Length: 442
Image (tube, rainbow, N blue to C red):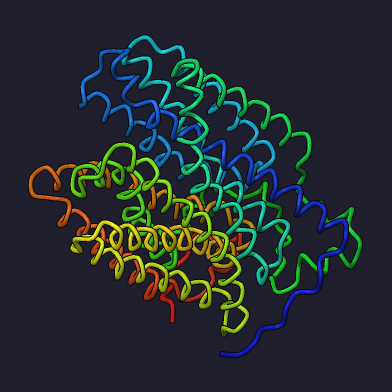
């Protein structure tokens, strides 16, 4: 491997915008995952208050994932056309209103609708974040900021029981939905007021040189991205490798995200009090994983022949680690060793997520970063939607051991999809071309 030229230091005005953008993405990401986790924290109280069966609660818990996954396909091209400022701002308003509406739910049907709308509203969060990183950072420096905005996911999951449980205990489960919904509306106003996309005509030569270092600049404005150009992404094996690969990564991650407390209580026979603390530890490790992965992927990319190869290799390494540590987690008798292995898996799962989003920023053509990132995320959340259902069925029919090994096998297939299909960046499309032949990567 050879060292690639490092980008010049960020000019002061660019650096200030970078800090503002990352702080706001981190804040909105934590709110995003607090909102997702509110129902899980209030599970038993909601079920008792509304008289829901376990089956109905399962539907309620999974409703969000299906609309979120489906909306990833159109939302990416919309972010590329309209820009992250307004798409994420609108998304924040929609998901915050639907989150607050959950606090008013008196029937199962109303609550399902609120959760479906929550999935629609939250869809722009990560494609917008990828677009922001692509807008404000040169390719060689995109790993660290990608790790930062991805770290909001495990941090929000870990904070949810710590922040919301006391609120529910003192007031009521409905207040958890109302307060997080109100917090999201405040963040929406701050985001729209403070975030701006870069306008090159208003930049100095130094600022333009920084943002364009290491990237082929396109004269085509993002607002002109068409459906044909979005569809053309599927002509490249890199797109399919990222879609299939992220399916495997998110599937195994969501096995733990949705079933870890139940697994610890049912298979590991831990007490309810110990389960709460034990389940939080791995997700704090996941927070660290997302932060570390961004920096490490930048280092690997700087010593690789290409940014795509470096970030892809970091992704494959993280996913193989997830597979390796899931096997002892399934078989060892010691709860301490099992929890340590699970903590490593979730550390690597969030590291792989950060690597996946940074990979999208260097694999996609400049005008379609959000589009490719959203396609990858669509594949991921198909895995995320399937994981809790398939895991529950396998655990009920046999045990958690084959359920965990199934997740490891799916992640292994995903890592191979990244390794063999994601080989080189996707070029910017010539708008005069009507078709693009399937490009075989070498």
